Image (cartoon, rainbow, N blue to C red; front, side):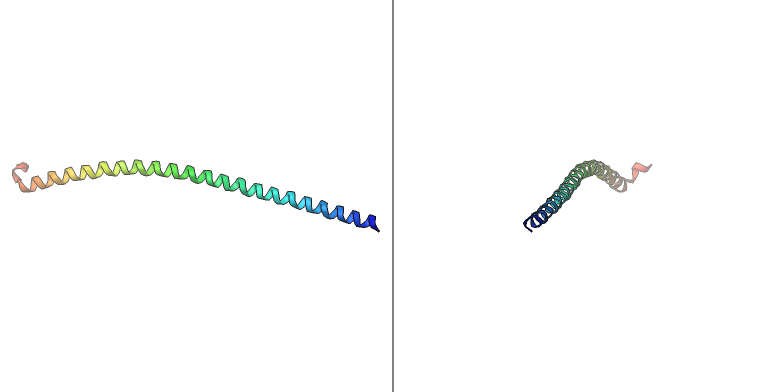
Length: 84
């Protein structure tokens, strides 16, 4: 009977080793996917910051043009001879 118990233990150890490898593979896949997600988010952040900076520049230029136009309109309304 000792032999049968040894085989059972060997089978149990084999099952445990197989389960351990499956768990390690699962953890490895999760880790890889988390790293990919992290890399994507870093890339997304950099791209978004760049696009927002470009948009901010364009808005600054438009704001400056608007200020110039407001001054021109203001001076034209205070001095109607500009229209004649």
